[in-house]
Length: 152
Image 1 (cartoon, rainbow, N blue to C red):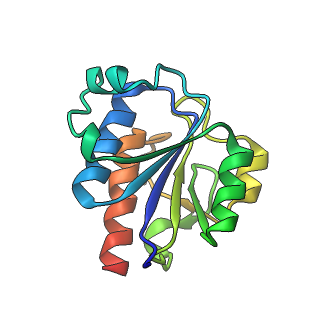
Image 2: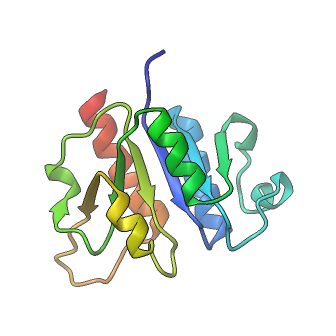
């Protein structure tokens, strides 16, 4: 079986962003991993209310915590690529692989140092306009677009 790109959300805070990312992933044929706990109700009903009318099309896997997610991804031999404002390498200068998992942190706090240090690669979306960070759904769309462009 050919591995495909995945999106992972670390303890997401905002249901609407998660719904947007799930919809994008469903439309593009990608799977999404949610690393709990989330800052909102993750029930099907709550996600539908967040605008996720594509929920039945979404390939969603929930992980109880980062340790269980990390064990799963190691078992699957997948590289973890973290998008972080603390990274130095631009995402456009990275060679993505089809089996990569693109990890996005909490809207309010990113990821803790232990998760940051666990990532196989840490990438940045340059912001020459001087902003602190982008909306996580927008950052995911930009990064997924580049990864898909590279891996086909």
